[in-house]
Length: 139
Image (cartoon, rainbow, N blue to C red; front, side, top):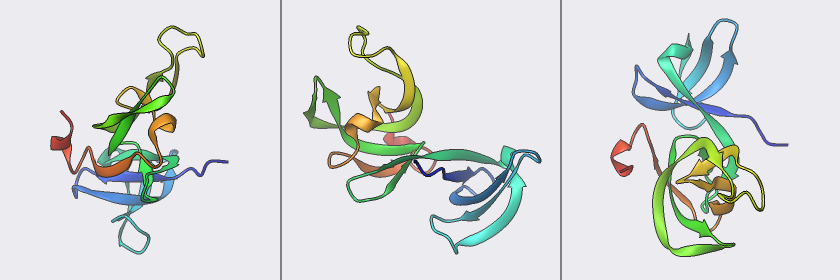
């Protein structure tokens, strides 16, 4: 079963934080600013003050967890193989599937540049930033 984890972008502090708790009843989350437990804990804040990013359940070639909003350097997937050139794009929840509907219908999953993240992760992909700290990396 996939581990459900979140991190967040703090709009106030302009940094990435690890979300330790979420309470949807009060519209709040508890987070630590930084990328590992033990970093500076700011306590509970309104969900309006942060942007939540969910863990995809996948890791890049260096073993780093891939979250929504990460920017990946990856090889596009085409016709059951990977292209030789690298591309750079962001991870997001979106629609994908075969354009002709032959193998499977269009559906929603984590994608990067229109490709299924499940097709491009692993030895060909590497996290090089995220859309909040490095927006200039996305065209």
